[in-house]
Length: 252
Image 1 (cartoon, rainbow, N blue to C red):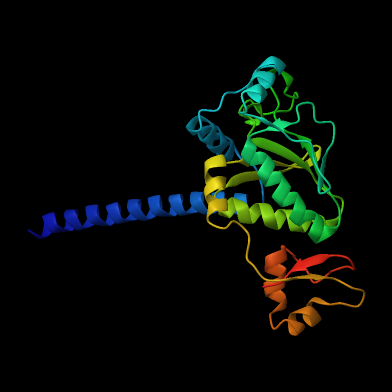
Image 2 (cartoon, helix red, strand yellow):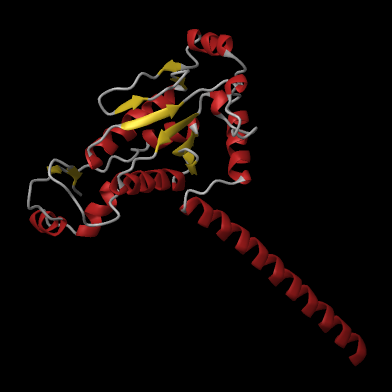
């Protein structure tokens, strides 16, 4: 029955074409999401994921100041006041989930060591009635699991923070977006994943530290300690070879 086998062969061929097209569509979608994350660009899908995490934690979207105070008294939100490594700028509600405080303290400590300036927090918990006009209706700021970080004018500091946020995003502990109006980073922290990440060792990689002196180069430091320039750059989130006196570098 040559005619029948020919029709079957044609149908099989069309099925293979459809499967290939579907696979390519999925691959393009996945690569698009990966590219979006790799450049800290926001998207509706990332906002939806943040909302999903908030629901998984059974987090309430706080409506007003009274609810914020109630959650603080219950210990569900903790005061975040800043320290030598980070400061708050015009933050109306200086509170966040306990994991957020840990995240800020650790990130700010490493940030100041790497680029010599404090991290600046511009927003934390923000009730739904106090959201700015340009805020997304899907924002998780009202849950206490989000923070806005001012973008430094220093290119080196921007590169360091970009690298740190991208690394943590790849670890699945947060979702970060680089915003332009005003220039800042929106960071949604995933508490359960972050706790597990810390329990597994977090970003601690051991080794020594080196305080940069005038005349030091990454090549010279790497040679002294038997490591590579790339290893030092990776450990410290450096995008280039520029270092400056007083900067503290972690060494493998």
